[in-house]
Length: 180
Length: 457
Image 1 (cartoon, rainbow over the protein chains, first blue to last red):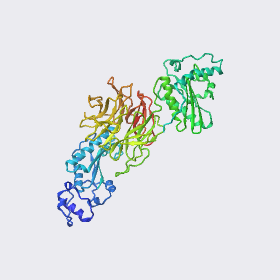
Image 2 (spheres, chains in turn yellow, brown):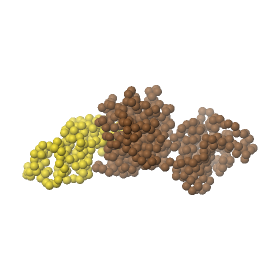
Image 3 (spheres, rainbow over the protein chains, first blue to last red):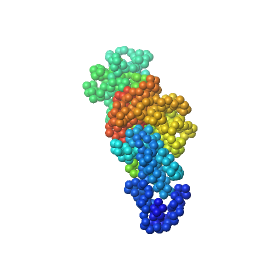
Image 4 (cartoon, one colour):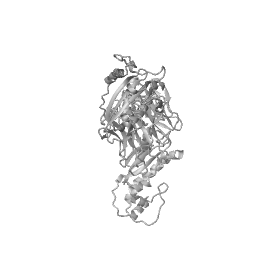
């Protein structure tokens, strides 16, 4: 992690950024000045998902581009459930690490449901999914001030299909970066 | 938007016309019409009855255009009136394409009652339309074919902006006079629709905008209420039908009230958390809604201006989708506190909670207006949902849709005889109406996806 952060700083040194809140900053980063350390590359410690973006490209992207191919992975839920299972928790934990690395990011946690529930009930279910993720993020040390939740019920499916595979993708908490 | 009637019509005129038409007809056609009108026609005398055990049979030929510019309005009014009267199923409406055997009448005294009688009509409606610039004058009479007397007679004047409204008004008044029934021809529906195919402006792409629309009860005259290019959902009417409340994502979901005739939009909940599913109390002073302001979806009630917030439910499960009882003393809502979503009732003071349904999944309760005492809801009946109705007096549940697509979000008409709902039975999501007995399904919308209807008073 230290080397990643250092690597990041090495490749794009002098850009002024808002000073991260101390609490949210991993101590390793504050300890490491931007010492250009040569190539010795450690494997990525984050269980970061497929199509990983290299961190410098994350830092440079426009907000819209960033969200278009978000480094924050969605967490998926079981049918009619707002409980994060082990896989869901792992995804949220990985997102939490990323949020600690980019402590200025503000996040909107969107709760979504599949089409098998009714429109009205799904608003409450999506609300509870987003709340479950937020609670877990806060327990991992992310400031609640950086997080907001919204429920979209079944209004915005990720996959418009009508089968198990589509429904599984649609029961999710999706992370949108609203400021950085 | 709403047409103003400068109608001279009134009950007094109607009664006069009963006597007057007979006297008038008598003057011209003395031989055929010797019997004098009764001095004080009783209510029985003005009600047209059918053969014993069958509904009265009505014929509604095209209204007579008194000048050429009125031709289109004349045709529209007759057809819409036919549809309106057929909707309540109080009369048998003789199909309009079977009238060719009856000679057309230009004036009321040319009406060929014998021919109408041969066609099986108990009542025939004769109307005229005159156009004067942007104004329209519609005269209508309902004749009892047997007695040849006009039992209903009125005249309306107004603009030509919405000719259908003349027919709706006539239909409501005939239902009132003939059947003592409150018709719904002048009521409207509100719903959410993605028909304008815009995309939400925001960080995530490819999300369709939904806006709030209103339309006449028959789906005609639809108009857009919101223009926020965001997600706008779950509209509901104020009891005076002059305002619509809904959830708008700004981008956090919050409750807004659009006052349709004042052009004013208010935001009573003022971003106190996420707020959804607003419903006006029957007296229009309060609003129940769902909010996560205390961390979990719960039911709240507030004054329409946002003051006087009161929490109604308190449970770690999700409570959603409130609906008021007709007296405003109770609220039914959906909760999954038992493990699955079910319908519950609680006093508006938060006391006396009880569970109503025992379905595999039940949501969106809508309390019927009086005199019916029942709650319609969407219940899982297979892969999808159907509309069911829980009768509060007997505790019995009946089903009114049967697996044609999936069917959600029932909403009662103000006379309790019809239910609007959203369904996928025609492909995409569309709004339909159905009788509370499960008969006469009618599709109202066709453009885009249309969901979550609410029916105005």
